[in-house]
Image 1 (cartoon, helix red, strand yellow):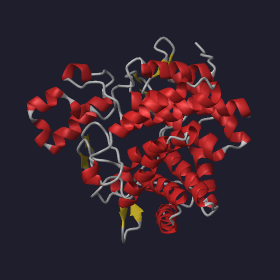
Image 2 (image 1 turned 60 degrees about the vertical axis):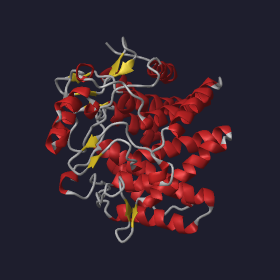
Image 3 (image 1 turned 135 degrees about the vertical axis):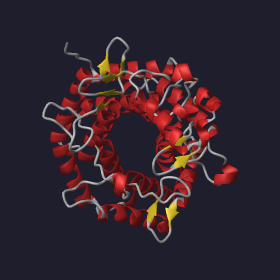
Image 4 (image 1 turned 180 degrees about the vertical axis):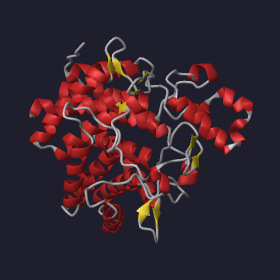
Length: 388
C-alpha cells in the first residue's frame, strides 16, 4: 500500500498524538529508570547498567511497563516540540501553537539542573545514562540537551518578545562555555569528561556563538570559532567526520553528520563569516552522495543502509532544507519524505515507528527520539514546500 499524506496535516496529527499523553513518553535510553532494576540492586555493577540499558534499547517489544519504567517528559524532546510548534505557527497562524509552546517552555525553565551547583541554566536527561565512554547520573547537564533547549527558547523568545526565554537561553550559552576545555580547544559533552565528540563540540560552538553575538562578547565568539576550527581540521578530505576521536567512535552516521553541518551553518550566521563554507560544501557533498538511495531512503551509516530510523529521516530533512537548500536538495527532501511515509509511518497509529531492520520492525513509541523529531522536521518541510 502506498501512503499519500500532506506534510502539514501529518505534522498536526503527530503533535496531537504527543499531546494526548501530556508530552510524556518512553525513550530508547530510559531503561535505568526501572523500578525492578533498582530493587534487584544491580546498579552497583557498571556492566549490568550498560547491559540493562541496551536490552531495552534493542528489544522489539516494549518491556518498560513490565519492569516499572514510567512515561516521562524528556527536556530535549520538549525543546523539539517547541521548535515544531513554531513551524506550525508559521504555517497555520492560529495562535494555539504559541500558547502551547509557552506552557512547555515554562516547564523547561522549572526543569533546570541545580543552579547552585552548575551556576547557569542547563539541562540533562531524566534518566541515568550509561555508555562505554562515561556514566551520567540523571540531573547532570549535557551539551546537546542544553543546546537544543537554548535554541528553542531563543526562537520562542524572539517570536513572543518574552525576555524570560531569551534570558535563559543566553544564560545557557554561558553554561555551555563552561564546558570548554582549556588547552584542548574544544567543548566537552558533559562536565568533567574529556571525550571529544564532534556534534557536541560544534553545537556547543554554535550556541556559544549565538550568545556571543547577542551580548556582544568578542572573546566568547573567538572561543566558539576556535572550537569549530578544531572539528573542521579533523574533517576528512572527502568531507566526512567520524563520530569522535576514541577508537569506538570511528563510525560515520547520517544524523550526527547532519548535526555537524547544521551547527557549522548556524555558527557562520551568528559570526557573520563564510570561513566554514568550504567545510560545509564538502560535508554536504559527502552527505548527499553517501546517506541516500535514489528512491529517498535515508541510510543510517555511510557504508550501511540499516536500520531505517525516523530520527535519521528527520535530521535529513532539516539538513537538506536548512544547510543545502538548493533545488536539488528540495527534490531530495521530497523523495525522503515520501519514502519515510511508506517505510516508517504507521497510519493506524498516526505516528512513526522507531526503526525498521531488513527483516524486523521496532514499533515502540519513543517521543523524544521519534515523534518529536518527526513533528519538528516535517513541519519545517511543510513550510519549505509552501515557498519553493
